[in-house]
Image 1 (cartoon, rainbow, N blue to C red):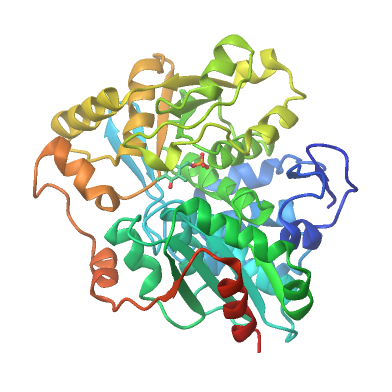
Image 2: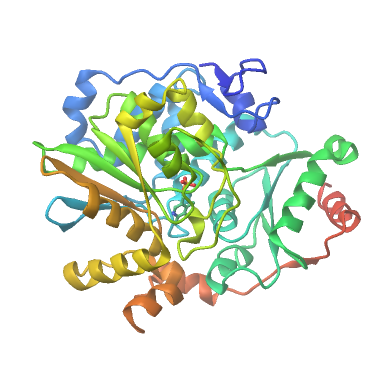
Amino acid sequence: MKYYSTNRLSPEVDLRTAVTKGLAPDRGLYMPESVSELDLVFFAQMGTLTFQEMASRVASKLFGEDIPSEKLKEIVYETLSFDTPLVAVEQDIYALELFHGPTLAFKDVGARFMARMLAWFLGEGKATVHVLVATSGDTGSAVANGFLGIEGIKVHVLYPKGKVSEIQEKQFVTLGQNITALEVDGSFDDCQALVKAAFMDSELQQKMVLTSANSINVARFLPQAFYYFNAVAKLKEKQKKIVFSVPSGNFGNLTAGLIAKRMGLPVSRFIAANNSNDVVFNYLSSGNYNTKASVQTIANAMDVGDPSNFARILDLFDHDHTWISSVMTGTTYSDEQIKESLSSCFRETGYLCDPHGAVAYRALKEELKTDEVGIFLETAHPAKFTETVEDIIGKGNVPMPGRLAEFMKGEKKTVEMGVDFAAFKKYLVSVSY
Ligand SMILES: *Cc1c(COP(=O)(O)O)cnc(C)c1O
């Protein structure tokens, strides 16, 4: 399969290049040149397959030409070592729980898949690959845990000292093995600047293989289609039209849903559920797309004012606003509305959302029609946002899952780093041997 850039100004590449480079040279995002439907036999059998079997068939349609089938199956099976259960919340509303992976957020699926695919493409015993990732919290933990223990790859997570929550920090500073956490005495932007400078440094480029684990990578974005199939397969309600409500920030998760639909998954429409960062909402309601600076909210993983994957959505629909609007609508909610929905859902149904899931739950409550059944994506475990959630529903109401408690016990190990590039470069040279 060839991959083209959404900007159409750089050559088509193969999967290996798309995955190892991440971004196209013209700064566009890579897209598969064709997305075709799975066959009727697959859809007839879907309900009887395990999640891993089903995902393997989807993966084979997407990546089968580029990776030997046994290897691809192994990557899928290792990635999906946990389930994504569909939980009934109330009449016609279900939660698709995507937080049963190692870091309790949906990014685990993409990060674990990408780590294994990258290892396959770069591996075969050659030089060690160094993955650099700057994080303001959640990405660092998903990437670090996704790559943990993978041979031939070393991950360096740069994060701003004192600016991530203790739970987030523990998820990448306690791992050891092939993961090093660099505690940078600066801001997230400083971390990102250091990573960018490393990629621009020709001496480093010669000395070592450097790559990023950015969320725009096709190997992180496409595997997210797997769990949409799993959700539809598990849904008992077969008569009504299916609507997915997706709490969105950079729109990778929702775009993967659109890909699943293109592959024939019977989904009627999508709701792009946003916090007060409303650029996509505004586009859907007016046809005008104007990015803006992000604003801070209690669903902070969706605080994005210039969503990177929106270019993919425009591309999938030939920039046709009418066509896009026939498949997705938008909602936008203030922090007050998010709190109110999290609280009423808990009170009335007993189901505890995290702040991101609460945005998507509210969108279904408001938008679902009588001939529809709604599934909202629960993208993180509420315990990842214990403080915020307990402020809303009261102390002691958020259970701490065992996996998270394990992280909290681990011992913090970091390399302290200033914001000057010279010191960071010296560090990288020292680990390149
Ligand atoms: C990253 C993230 C989102 C947003 O996902 P996108 O693919 O960027 O739209 C939503 N919820 C949580 C918990 C996240 O970590």
